[in-house]
Amino acid sequence: MPATVRVAPAAEKLVQVAEALQGLLTVSRFLDGSQKKAVETILVTCVREANTQVDNELFGQGRSLPDSECGKEPIAKEKRAPTWRRHLGKLKHEAAFACIQQRLSARFPDNFSIEPRLRRDGITQDVMLTDRWGGSLQPDIVVHFARNATRIQCIYDLKFPCGYEVGTNPWTPAVVSQMNAYGRLGGECPPALVTPQLAILRQSRTP
Image 1 (cartoon, rainbow, N blue to C red):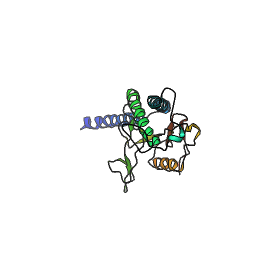
Image 2 (spheres, rainbow, N blue to C red; image 1 turned 180 degrees about the horizontal axis):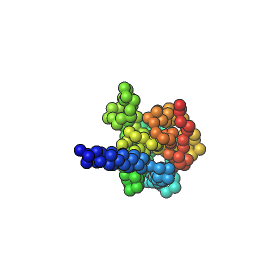
Image 3 (tube, rainbow, N blue to C red; image 1 turned 90 degrees about the vertical axis):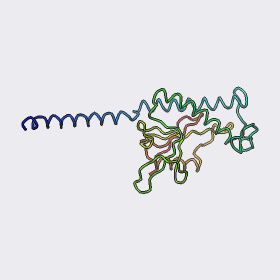
Image 4 (cartoon, rainbow, N blue to C red; image 1 turned 135 degrees about the vertical axis):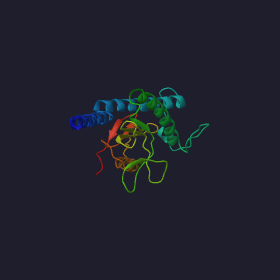
């Protein structure tokens, strides 16, 4: 019996140490500030490369579609959308996603997801992965807790202005509404736009 009395405090101490270590590991599974900056650098680089790559392939080196054509039907063998604006957006998203997948996987393989579909549970209000379209959202890029896309750090949405729309304000009412909806999923930072011309853009968090 005395031996049992002597062992119990030691066992309790071991449990406390294990819990403390687990806490440190849990914290380390989030990306820190410098790592998030590295992620954003990769996102901006990939978006710019995808924008240039698709434009060069379709319109020639250093050229892009004129603004006047953006709303017209695309001239292409495989039309991805009814207008040039949406057609190019799909192609550029695909090119950017491929770049992002390759480069982020090399550095932060467990801390990002491309186009996860998320929703809040109506009862618990927990964020959940889902395959249901109704009541769910699908951000382009989610940076999150290691191997857990529902523990969100930051959300990013890729935007590719059509034609020469370099100076166009990207914060249209539709985009503001979309980003506010992403913000309600939670996270450490307000959702951000990533554009080839303006890089990372954020608004203040919605209350």
